Amino acid sequence: MRWTSYTKEKAIEMISAGISEDEIAKTFRMSKSSVILLKYSVVNVNLETLKCEVCGEYLKQITSTHLKNHNMSLDEYEIKYPDSKTITESRSQKYKSFKHPNKGKTYCEIYGEKEANIKKNKISKKQIGREAPFLAGTGITGTRKDTGIFARSSYEANVDRIFAIENKKICGEFSEENKRFILTKNNGEKITYQPDRIDSEGLFSKGAFLEIKGYMYPEDWEKICLFREQNPQLKLLVISKDEKYYDIDYKELERKYRNRIQLWEDQYQNYKKNPEIYQIDYIEPSEARFFRENYLDFVSVSVKEEHLRFIAKKCVSYCSVRFGKKTYVDNIRLVFITDRRPKSRISTGKYFYEMWEISTHDNKKYYITNQEKTTLFYCYEENRFLELSKFFENNNNAELKYGPKSDLVFLNINKDLVDKFERKDILKRIEDIFSHRAIPYSVEDIKLVYKEETKRGAINNREEWEIIVDKKDTTFKLTNFGNATAEYNLIEIIKDS
Image 1 (cartoon, rainbow, N blue to C red):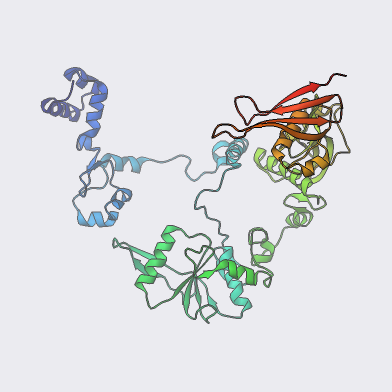
Image 2: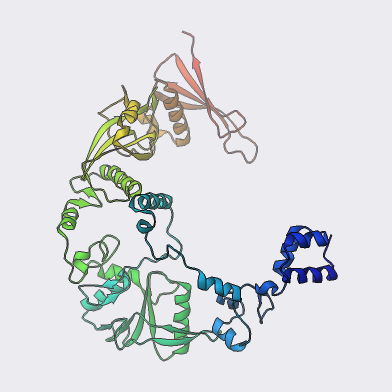
């Protein structure tokens, strides 16, 4: 059934009288969901909705977000429609009575230290590998010791240093000369804007305001445009790496000055990583000094090889996520290494199979291995040693060179043939098959014995390759005569003796 004008009117009267949805549904032979839908679509039933005077839409609350669609602020709406409410009485009372019991408390205060660490570690694990959020801020804020000027980012601090080395005066954000401007947006809304710096003595342009941006947010560019429109007598220069916006290219400044300025800030040396050389009145704790002098990125400075540091950092990352603490690696030792999996499957990946023992500053041991897949190194705690070492039982070759191999490693193909043979895809396919099947011969030569063009759209032509190995009574054929020309199969041929 459907609502008629008469039944709808009566149902609304019953809803307003507080009669239950079940009773109304039985009375009019309607479903309960129809009654509920009617209840929340009716104007001002139980005073739960309000009418927007601009568009006529009924809402639980008229918010600034909704009014943006009408190019109007909440203050402007209240001035224009003084008799119209923006929030229902019931909703207002709910906001007043609502008190969150955990507001302002830390995880430790809510759950206790042990449970808080577990929850924080779970959150950290989910973040591993994720990209930084779009428009995420990266500025490092503080007053630098060498300039004495407050900077909101490394870019600003470096620009201050450029003025210092050129012996030119610059006015900071909070100087008396650098006032805050009031700007008017197209919809009449008033906003304020304060430039980052003033070029007092004309290093770039005398008296010009400077806006220094690592990333240009849309609202920042809007303010810059409004400033230029409403203050045409004033000059504003943008310093940035983004060619869409800059008047002065920060990359050019970087190339010109970074080698001349000892305290130039970048990703390796900055206010956050090296507080002792940037922060005013900074007194470095003795423990912090010990770790700074003896460890680089939490790994002992005695560990210098690139691959060893790569392995050690796996342990540092694991402890950071698993335990939520900083771990300092003292020593790293190769325990096992092999070029093949058990049952003689040779590694064709980027690395051989390795197992490393990590000793940390807090006298704990961890093991790093890539036995699951050669390109993936995982960290394990000490109690997993016996389980992990089974992979290397009777399968260890200490003479192998650890670390990454070249992109194309051919263990089963003659080196001279590798150098002269152009079809590297064929070589790679042969190498993979020989390695995975543990075929104990070395490939001496490869010849194309048959070729047939296929229909349009096939990945390869139909081909048959003869593979000559160092055992004279055996040859192999590599063909892709199946349903998919991209798939090559190996056929072993034993000659009659």
